[in-house]
Image (tube, rainbow, N blue to C red):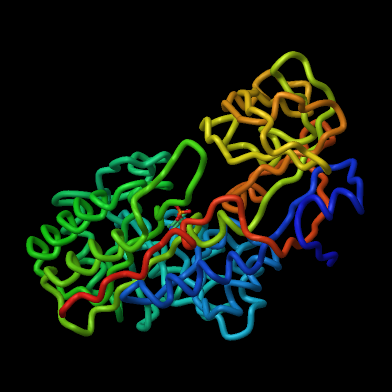
Length: 391
Ligand SMILES: *Cc1c(COP(=O)(O)O)cnc(C)c1O
């Protein structure tokens, strides 16, 4: 793997014609260490966010040994990491996937949000007695870029019934939720814990684990979230108020917050039409979130001898495919002189960028390099040391 000090050194040397994934494994390592040091429980990684070996290797090297997987391919992939503990947290699983997970990969931990799924898990594990079952409950999404509440989660009396039924077959019973991806304020977790508390009391079951899911934010040009330590404080105090014993496990499974800063995308400008830049990756590539969800990733022009005082002007970006929805409307602020042949670094695409890229229209091929400088934005560099709280 080729290593460079920064993007300018890389483009000067390689003059790449195809888009480049520039990994910063040290940024993934820093994120993992922050969560391990500051989150008052266990930290798992949601594997789907980015499964690049450079990124996953850095998380593992920093001490992450639990991984949340959602498919057979993901679990087979993640199972190659030595000593990992895998959680199968997709609430709807194929029967063959449950059987394979339990018997071939020794996975005991499954999420579910219906009695039918509970029945499937019991049947496909041949009535196993060592299951860790997490009931996925519906929680209100608040200040989340990508709410997940309509697809998964059970609530009300149905949730109480499912908790009681799962308790009867589980060795360990957990409750899990997901407040929605890129949740920018911690109050979503307060609301979620209120639901958890209500359900535990009403169902009258002993709960052994709470998994707060992912949703922790990263920093983008159009999104400046609350500090991560504020999220941690809110979760800590909500956990203290739950009717559970001190042995109750607390788990989080961030995807985005652990890996967003760990990759940039370096694209080349194929054409400029006014303030529209046609670049060599786009919405069918690593910029899906910019095209479909209007994320504004940070950008900078990578050109030798650039005058730093040059004013920035707004640009729209267009991807390389023939499709007209392959458009990232931004605005992306770049120097007015940007021209064909220039390179642009698109920062913080480490979460879901690589994972969502396709081969549509024959595009979707990348070079991989490692950069040693800092990511364009870091939520961790900005993080002040959290104040210790009295227990
Ligand atoms: C996607 C997902 C995550 C990670 O979500 P982020 O918003 O990327 O942190 C965690 N848990 C489950 C069950 C998920 O589906």
